[in-house]
Image (cartoon, one colour):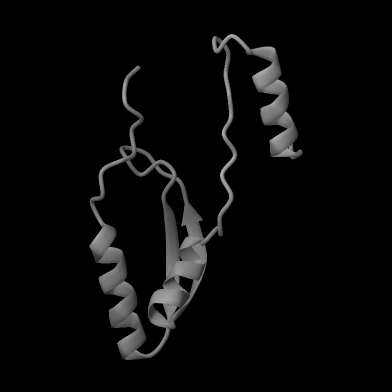
Length: 93
């Protein structure tokens, strides 16, 4: 359910003041989607054609990409640069 993330963080902090409950640390920033990243890095256009998967592809997206030969080469190089990036795992407590 959408809401004010800062208010939720304040309420969680108040409820778990002793540090034993869940907490949120909202972080400000600019959100860049995969579609926007392709455009920013290569100049090509992209559109989602599928998402999700199994066997390690959970959370993945499939994009169709259009552009000049040079733009497509830049887009492919950008994707290949992050291909195989290990998943982010928080350190064990």
